[in-house]
Image (tube, rainbow, N blue to C red; front, side, top):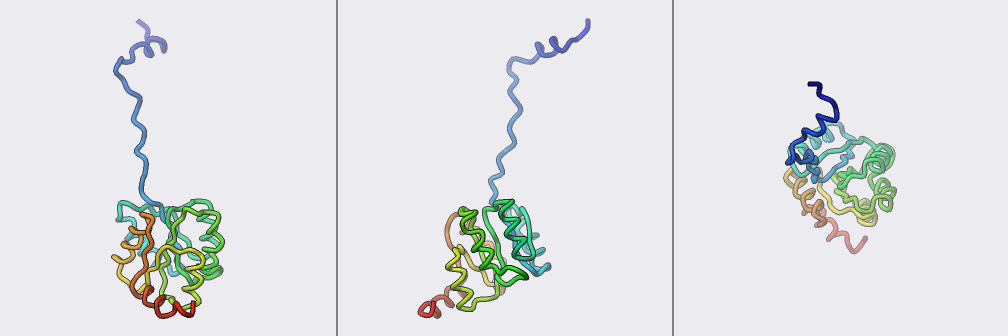
Length: 166
């Protein structure tokens, strides 16, 4: 007997279910913006080991950060402040209205009052000093990914001391 296409379609088992859909990826997506290659690569490798995060891109300067963020629409932007081209503050200014759901964690050694003022005005959600431990960076990302704000102790002390001048 010849098997025809019509015959093979008839032979489907009655209890066959459609193939399962791929599981939704519920990890928070992160775009890392850091001009220092060693730091950028180290952060990328460390964050890859955290199951709740997915690194979707990296950039080494401000304009590339803006372009990638607009294209990739990350959940979290991990952003340095002082970079070639556009500063982190300018990156935030350009992205604020375009990606309102994006959360921003600033990772920087710079905590001067004018920088703090600009970061606060542009809507950052967390700040981690580059002198902090990686566990502090993870704490910040965990909290910010849940919709909370997180600032390390050094930043909070700087804001408290300078708040009368902000």
